[in-house]
Length: 455
Image 1 (cartoon, rainbow, N blue to C red):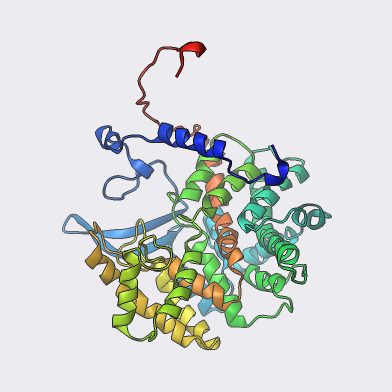
Image 2 (image 1 turned 135 degrees about the horizontal axis):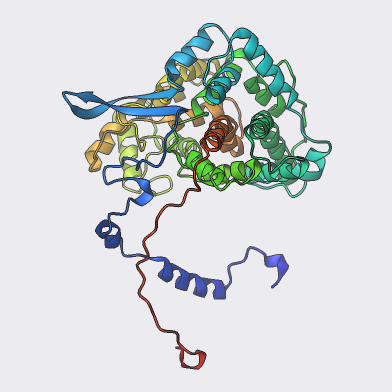
C-alpha cells in the first residue's frame, strides 16, 4: 500500500464495500415482526426503559383527566427545575457552572463555603502535565477538535499512576480533573490546528485561578484575553444548560454502557466524546448556523413572513441548504411544545444580540422560531408537536461570541463532561451488571463450502 495515499478509497475497497453493504441490510419488516425497538424507542418515539437515574429528568407531558398530553418541557437537575437554578445564580450575579457541577455530582446545592472550596479544587486541577501541550497537543493536530479532545483524554491515561482504579474516590478525582482540563484540551487543540493549518499566530494562554470556567474559556481563546461581563455570563449559562439532559441521551447512555464493563475513566469519557461528536447528537448547532448563513443570503427581506416561509418550505422539500429535508434546530426527540433550555436561553441571547448590534439577526431567528413549527406540521405527518431546541440558539450565541465553528461541539463537551462524570459515578455506585442488550439473529444456517467449489 502506498502510505502517501492513506485515505484513498480504491476500486477494490469500493467492490468490497458493496458486499459489506449487502451483507448488512436487514429487511425492515423484520423489525416490526419481532417488535424490535429501533434506536431503543417505540413507535411513538418514547424511549425504552433501560435503567434508573437520580441525576436529571426530562419532562414533556402532563396528566390531564388520566391522559398523558404534551406540555411545555422541563429539565430537572437533582430535583431542581433548571429555570429556577439559572434564575437563582444570575439574580445574585454569580457564575453557575461550578455551582451546578457540585449539585450534579453530590446531590446538594453547595453552601458559600463549600462552593468556594470546590472552585479552589477545580482551579488546582486546571493544570496539564509538564510538556503535554508541546508533546501531545502540538503533534499531528487534527482538523476535528473532538478527535483532538478524545486523543488528549486517552493520552492522559499514561500520566495517571492510578488510571485503572475504579474506586469511587479515584474516579471522582479523575472526573474533577477532566472537568477542569476540558477547556484547555479543547482550546489548545484548536490553537494548534489554527496555527499549523491556517497559518494563524499561536496563542497559549495559561488559565487564571480566580476566573470561572466560562471566563477562562474566553481568556484562553482570545488573543487579547478580553471579554465583556455579558459574554462570560451567557457562555456560563450555555454551559449549565448543556451539562446534563437525562440518562437517555446517546452519550450519557454510552457512559453507562462503557462504565459497566469496569474499564478506566479515560476510555469511558473518550467513548462519550465519540458519541457526542456525531451530527445527530452534539453537532446540530453547527448545521443551524450554516443554514441561517444561507438563509440570510437567499432571503431578501428578513422580516417578510411569506418570503421566509417559502425558504423554510424549500428546506423541507430538499431544495435548499444541504438538501436533507430538515429545518435544523427545530424539533426534539422528547420535547414538543417547548424546550426549556431554548426558553431560558432566548432572553439572554436577545441581550447579547443588542450588545453586538445584531438585533436584525435575532429578529430573523425569532421569526423562524414562530414559523417553522407551523410549516413542519403542515408539511409532515406528526405524532407530536415541534418547537425549537437548544441548538437553535446556541450556535447563534457561539457565533456572536466569535467562537470558531470548530469549537462548537467541544464547548458542548466542556459542559457535558459534568453529566458524564455524574453518570459514571452513579453506574459504579450501584455496582450493576455489564450492559448487554439482546440482538435476535435472523440469518439461516448454511453448510460449509469447499474452496474449489465456491462461486
